[in-house]
Length: 222
Image 1 (spheres, helix red, strand yellow):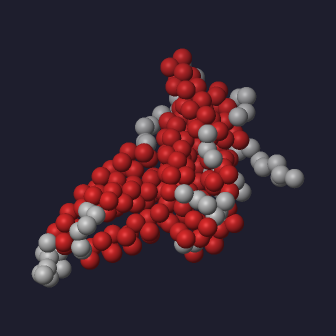
Image 2 (cartoon, rainbow, N blue to C red; image 1 turned 120 degrees about the vertical axis):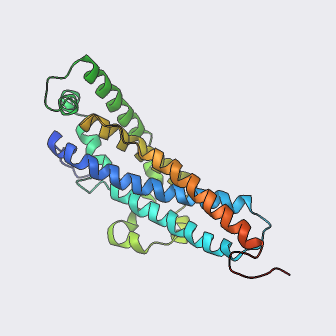
Image 3 (cartoon, rainbow, N blue to C red; image 1 turned 180 degrees about the horizontal axis):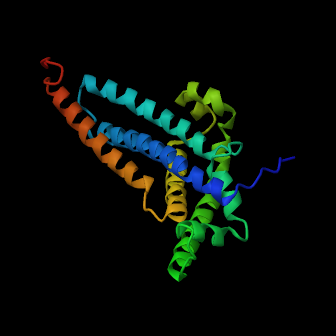
């Protein structure tokens, strides 16, 4: 039988919002680096380069870091989690309370109510679209054990890269909407994912190309 978990107050939700946004941003950056490295490796198929081994190590580390950070924001048992925020936003008075928070304690106007209503609906719909079955496949690695998890173990639990990406993007959307509701600020972790992807791709693509030409490590081909 599932244990009924407590519903946080608006004050607690407002305090956890920056933390959830920071953790989600770290997950987004880690996944962005993974995706950028992966793209660089695909674009340089056929090139012989030591840098490819380094890139593959980084790619593995980043996908595992992504998982660790996802657990930090999605753990049902944690007081600071997207699931905790979801329990609050389902409450009938949640919209009034976040609108007041959005308006810095002043009586919210129609624009504030509309913005918060849209943000709340997007958070809830995104949350309900999360595939918790895939998340639950590796839930036994929660807390201390997740730090020692390796990707082959995650694969044995039938977790795919596409499922990880979907979870990251969902958390990015929820974190951004939560930040907007509780502060009125725009801070979207997805932007960090895209930036990290582009930077990692450009760096590792250039490194592999240069290395394949014998210049990166001071060696010559042939």
